Image (tube, rainbow, N blue to C red):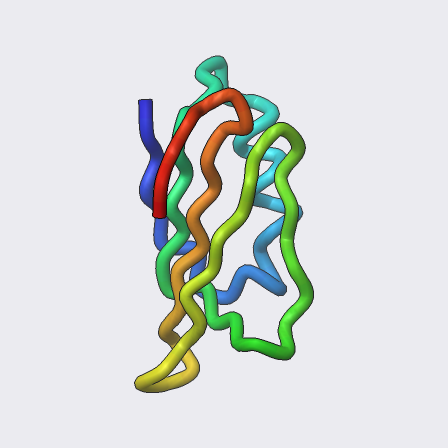
Length: 77
């Protein structure tokens, strides 16, 4: 099962997002956060049991995608 969400500034809303995940009864295989507002100088936002990949903003400050893949899943990029 996958989750796609617009997080609108991961720096401000990451803790809220983690609370959402902890209260949800499903463990997602893949989580995709769009409009995360991160760039190359941003901190890495880790989620336990997931590997994180980022595509940093290019057009404006609202760009950026973070993809989290559950560690037990084999994948290729």
